[in-house]
Length: 330
Image (cartoon, rainbow, N blue to C red; front, side, top):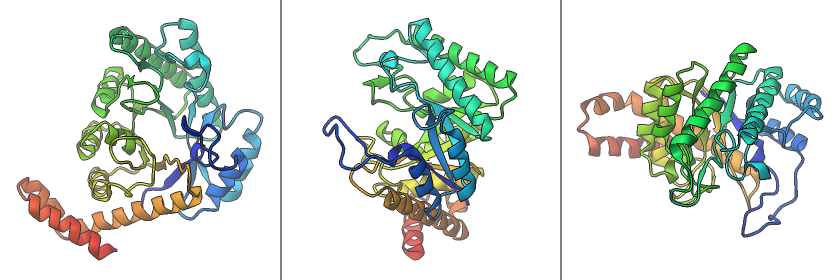
């Protein structure tokens, strides 16, 4: 079964615009990694440069990873948490800001090489707009693609093995974020056409974009460009980052089915934000739901799901099969 890793950014006191102090106590980066290592079913972590790792704490992190047999799975550069990035990063109109963002991503790749990190995500969080026609999107895409080419040139010149992934999201923190859907991000990935450049589908992001996520996974897997996944859930209105399967269990099963069908052997990354709840409980519930979903998929295959799908006409029969398999596995 696919290994599961945890994004450690959600394992501390979390603040939002309604409660700038949060409900918990801050937890150090090193302690968060230890907690992951002590949690059943968690085999790796994800984090950011420089907010969670830099040259000052890298050796300590390396020791903890070795002590707990954890892998650093995804490391990306934070390009949306500082004032200079308020209007953009890799696509910003200011060439100096774009260069700062490029250098931040290169830093993440350099640090990632030390830990044999397989994935580095690009999330265009602030590359977008808040008002209609605020941003010239044609120029924005030109600048962003140019930045991506520079990053990939750096990656190849250093012979790094890391796969770089766009992570689409339709909105938040900007009203509209460029490449806000899976299909639009895939269009840019295919334009760039580099073997180390693909997609990370965040399930919660696809849900708030009102995507048919089964379709989205199928599209990207068909193109052989799904390099990573982030799992969480929501009510399709806000990106609440609760454990996968808590709001849309059958849809989670459909996504897992497509990944099983296409032979996806990458990681399941957890992108969770337990504002009020215990982070370990969120991780454990996520592991339970993902594993349960995979068992449902296996049972569906044993009971003829592939034949039903091949016909393309057996909607009620497929619905009953999913229901019955969920009930039996439980």
